[in-house]
Image 1: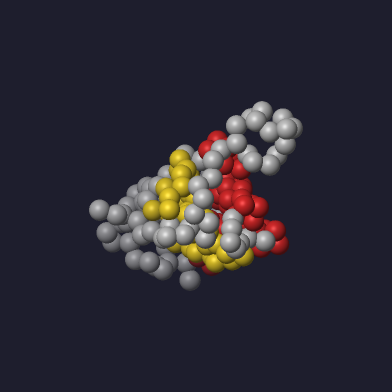
Image 2 (image 1 turned 90 degrees about the vertical axis):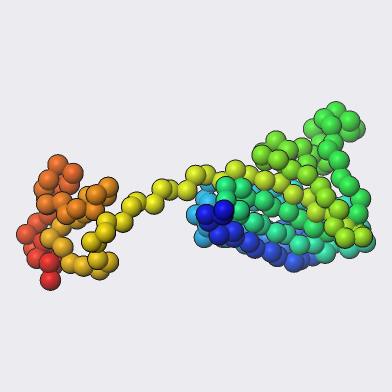
Length: 186
């Protein structure tokens, strides 16, 4: 049984350098909206690496689709393009320059993600994907049976029992001024 709804976002684009930054901002905004701020840096880095690979290597065109999906505790980010060739990881030291940054995108994806892979997409295309572990959701506090949303009370509620807590009690070390208390009871 799925206890949380899935969340999904897809963006179609031409993988051009000017668009990569825009897609990073779109992905970051969705993750912020889904309260997954802790995943923004890794997801944005992964999207950048995958879109850069499409820009540099995909043929016959640079059309692609970025998909971001949260299902339970896994965020999956994938980039589909129209090139059926399967990419590989560049091993360090195999290029002419050991300090080269080209060809290391998938190695970065592998290092920062929980899992990653490539799957064929249709007759002429592929999707490269990676997953990130989503942080645990905050536990919902149980609702008190006789609590009425919007009801006016004499003070704050205890977070665990939802019982009124008198001002100045140990759970509320700062006593509220009398003027503020009268505003709360109107």
